[in-house]
Length: 290
Ligand SMILES: [Zn+2]
Image (cartoon, rainbow, N blue to C red; front, side, top):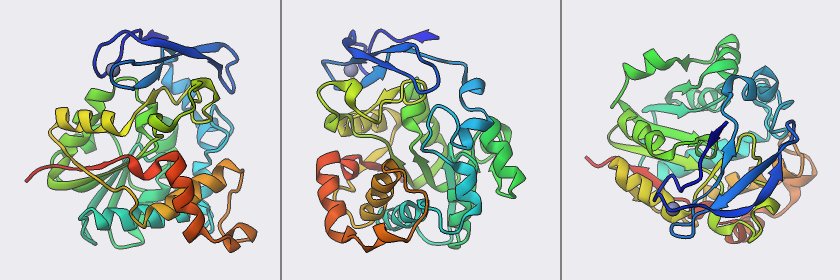
């Protein structure tokens, strides 16, 4: 366990924001919020990563029962198709060109990378541990640390989909992303919007304190981009978010596959309304200056 009493972004002492039990580990985790910059975090987060992100985690039997990286690799009707379609549209809107190189950083077993390869991108995933092994066993190109280092500064697009909230130390994480991008390259991110969290932080479903340990506001991302030498790209309200929001909403309701009755709902109207509450699209992407 590593104690983080002060804000990782601005150094201000954390204001206690309640406690929350884990899903598998039943101890109470301490939450804190920064009164200065709004960043929120788990104070006493676990750091035995190999145990947290084991084979069971990637099968949805770990600390986050809503992930199923293995199912989405083999099921062409995986619910994640909505999210992937949306992210692809958003990346194009942010300037990504079809056929370019795309790294899905923290991409689990590589389902998104496989989807992108099917849409003409030269796509790879990067992850470590059980997720990387699962991806390679399914024929997805999952790069290791050494292979990744050799490709610094070359990627047209880097994505980090629901990754930044797992990171204990945000500044080196965003610096790493910046180093991977080529000048002019686009960074695509999704992570929970802490600005829209309930006032009582433990009531926020996104707080899964074994694994989701860092919670950002849009302004926090802009700060971190600036420190990493990246320019924020405002994506608020862009159309592609409809697919992302649709995926997130149905996933939370326990739906695993696309189609069926939920497909009949008027998502073109629903998704923007949900987005207005959750602030999903308020989290900016970034670009590395030319
Ligand atoms: Zn702060």
